[in-house]
Length: 410
Length: 102
Image 1 (cartoon, each protein chain N blue to C red):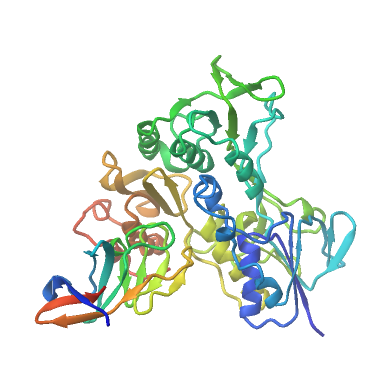
Image 2: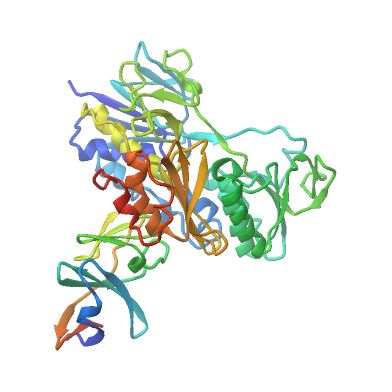
């Protein structure tokens, strides 16, 4: 009898998982369910080219519009999966309809962290996750308007960059000492701060928003340290949280997302997870990691699909992402949460470098500004997880590809 | 018929090398794969980075900015985020100099 594979979450991971099932020759039913009304689309442009009006939505679609019908993929867009019954093997949609599955992929991604600051409901206060969010912010953009950006993580940094490039006056408020400090640390954060400062972004650090103020529409932002910043609109970027509510009561373990093994399997019969939502065991790092970036969703969706087809392939791609801010290309590869020392190849001052996060003599991760070729060449070193002499990666005469004894990995 | 333009002395582009040249206002990258020359638009179709700034692995060029991969023999996209192929050009060697069609 023909099997039914259901994919909940119609974004990058889910969209590519559906395509992969067909590419691998699966001939059962494939049902792709997504809460947003649009077919799967790429989110990276939403804070960059799309937000600046340089890029059409059609250009951001993961697959051409007729792809799903042509590949006999049933789609339910604009419908929320509200509950999974793992015993009956049924997904509940919008609290009523039921869809039976033989295997299920959870690719629900993240939602923006909720925040409860007074005045958050005022008109003109936005956050950014979906194309609809990006459209609302885009409608506010005009030269000379004033924006406050709350939070200087990736979304905040990219939005600030796009707004400045569109002629908007930008003030950033961030609780840390430098941008992206949690990920990159103080030294690299200062480089990014310098880039934003040189492009005329005002930045307020070690302060938080106490209230959004205005009559109906936001007109000022009040901070905890007593500042009052006039503005025409606000964009808040305070991170995301994984969407796991639908799995309550299924026996699937939830801990910083959906816990899965290296095969992206939850341990519950027939249920897999991929993308932002998946806290997956990564063999290279010997621990579970959850990654909220494009390449992870792009690669993990297909990997999960193949394992649903019993290919038994562990997922061990090295996390990698990029961010564009002004004319700078920033890239990161690996995974680190702490490090003993930062070793730099190139120059932080000249904003042309790869910086390696080294712990116990191993390079866990690297970040590059305008040095993407070297970052890619660092991948084998990161994947090898072997001790490396601190002087070697900094030596410009050393080809980074030669530093790992294992073969080139991708 | 395609017109060829001389861009480089042959010995200046060794095996495994990739370099960009300005050919009548267009940036064209030329890759030397085991002694065979492949020419294609240097500008990545994704975000406009210079492909010659990336690595060449056999007949694949990898964009240094966002990792898009192109087949230098055909210009085809092998790996996104790029979606559109890059234009390719003919090459030939004439009297120790490398030429591309324009």
